[in-house]
Image: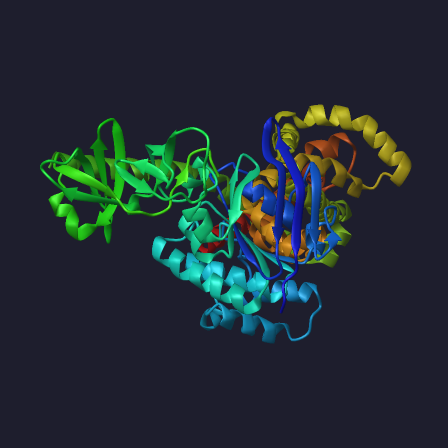
Length: 343
Length: 262
């Protein structure tokens, strides 16, 4: 199955005095999975609901496969949707839930198609169970099978993993990626979890105040954030003072390359990822460890260097030498950095 | 030791209260049974023999038929009006929820006699337009049962995520009619049954409106019968009471099943 192109053009939506969408433009290529990422209230869910036909835009257009469907009701849009809340029909079994949309379309072989979809999401052994007999992860798998069974033009995922525990979330997001690649349906995935977005998406759109702040491949969004907001939201970033030189930017005595050339002011703020920072115990070092937090395979250490606080991500094996108060030397790896306010 | 004495006292007090309440409720019923079975009267055998009852007490038979008709029609009209309204308000007009709740609970605060004063001129038109059948009381009774039926249906809707279920069904291609009939209704079936049982129980026990609007129903017939055949009147009252008990028992069983299912 090949996907269709989706184009959201200049979408605006206001709730009272709040501008949920402020002229959003977004284009999804056929078969592509785009993750919309952003903090609560940034408009990502509103955009998805308008695409689904569950909410109306004040202005703007929704174009799917070249057709303007802005005024088309939700039940005639041919879109599969998985919701954040568990949305399986409680009075129907898993199989009957998957068959629901097929029967409405009067399609033959509903049972065969339902079985096929339940197998695709790996839950065929629970086909005759009711939703209350399934775990949260299993319910979301059935919801995914139900959404895909109708062969939708577009698949919409509205924070489908947010109600699940961490381990199931990771498993299921990988399943979603596998299944989406297999069926090739154009997919819009809304989430506030940056790790989830980076893991599953072909492209990630970071939203802020009803607009797209940056749209790009996950690596580009992470390594070359378009703004301080993106750098901050997608992973942690240190904001460190630096001086522009001909070769890059000098931060804490180390010259770092830039993700994009910059001109203008000499004194700038560089956005440095914690994983690009090394912390070495050194009695003559200019830094002092403030806190060290154990996070499993790695630890987060905050070091005070002069007036600046530097966050570093270090291997947990080395954190024993970095107790609070330990004098340390901070070293920056020569990884390209972005500058605040300069894209 | 002191705790043991306290528990014993508590237990005795509990049994005394239960005993007093039992006597208070059961004694009149026992008296009714005793009164209707005194001597060699054939009250109960007549009551269960419909052809004989219709022949001997035609007004009572008419009252029973009318009450059953009113109960069935009221339950249907109430469900047809209230269920789609309650669902629609939840889905599309949540801002109106408080207003609808207020309107539905209003009849609870208005005494039946006041309702009749307001309904009398309305029923003059009802007489003129569709005749003076006692079944026309269905309209008044639909208003009367609104508070109870609304509470029941609203509780049923609160127990499920109506909005998400409806949106899921819409995205799968369901029309609004399909959403209501195939997604929401099956999930509030217990609440709808409860509303229907309450409606039947209330209608079977209604006297004031029927009497003041000069219509016939079971309670009006019992009242009239009391003047000519006290024994049969008491027997029918007892039978109506038992029917109401059975309905309430069914209601509580439905409620239990709902709790277990959730």
